[in-house]
Image 1 (cartoon, rainbow, N blue to C red):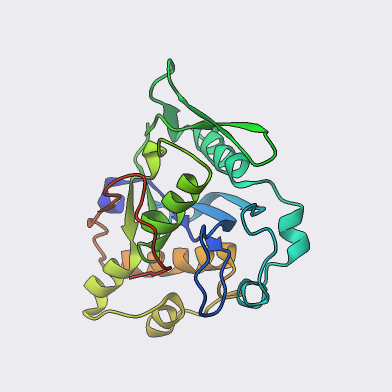
Image 2: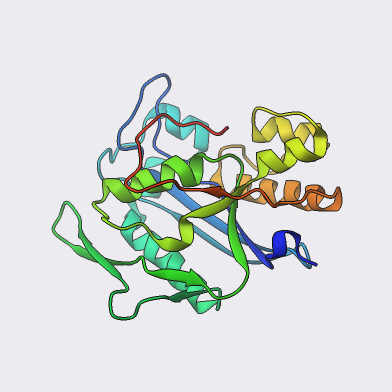
Length: 239
């Protein structure tokens, strides 16, 4: 039986514009990865991966590039966040995991700095047993709500309101807390594959941890929830 009763976990690890010792607001998403992990087979059924072009702070800091490996030319050739967010939502609809909950009022239009209009679907619901999963609460408690607020969204997509924090499952299985993903992998004797702070590589490494924790009896029953929208803006933190 699938842990937590969910058949698919959407594993996400955003990367965002950042600088060493300096707070950047808004902290825009520059990499948007998603892995659909099937909890019965423990295989990834499909992936979504897009880089994102920041608009408030369009030039990546040297610190950000050195940390994430994402270069300026990569984001300059990418879509902006409203386009990538809607592409992700439409993929989940196409895969039969998500549906529009209100066809009379399915979403809203946001206008970017150049005056271009972008439709974003917000009135959604999962039609198959799914939930998002991240290593910490920052991705869905701070980063994504902050990005949506920064582009002027008055409503937050309903399917992003709940998620599972893998760090809590790690603590349940191991009996102690661990400060970060790389250290968690080390404690579980799992090789860190690819580049740490690459969103897609980190998502795949999180999926490896999830497989281990499922086999060790992790319950994956503690659900984190977004308390409200718009969010309180704060520093990056992955508790």
